[in-house]
Length: 117
Length: 113
Image 1 (cartoon, each protein chain N blue to C red):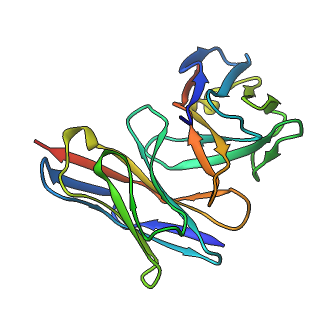
Image 2: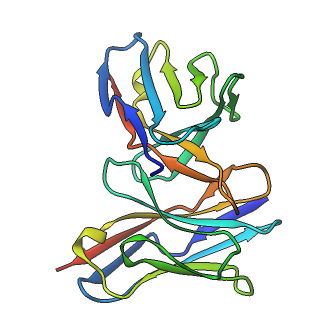
Image 3: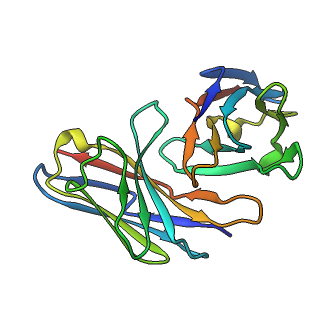
């Protein structure tokens, strides 16, 4: 159980275009999902917290107009990178929060490799 | 405030020998602690988690970790390394501030044949 999928697994796009990444919790409902960015050989950097039915909460320094997040249902959150530029090339990972008896646990998707030419 | 320090950025072991990945944390609250593993170009997989129910936590693939409050440590161990264990390992703490995670810097485990 507690499986999270991401689509696409990798995408290559031209500079100036927009890219949408989907994150789905396959076997549980998640009112909260998270979007992270990971640079090579580094740990994960939280970009934003996605809440079903409400606006996302962005971390300091993350442009909300550039990284649009929509959490339309209890199993789906999307991240749209608008007007992508080469510096947006990165590994993007989502997670979905599963409530537990003692603690809530984040389960991560397999990641999406974005390359902007 | 909370922080996590993984004491070794790289650990190299021979196949069949024990694995020890060290993690120290600081937290103003009673923390929840996690170990995740990441294989190249993959997402993070949960290995195990400490939630105050038991100090010795057993996880998947033969890994376990012991929560030691007096030492503020949560080291990850495995009795016998397998080649497939080669990956990046993250120690993570979740504190009282909602479900926000604080990640350690990661430890790359290399397993030699």
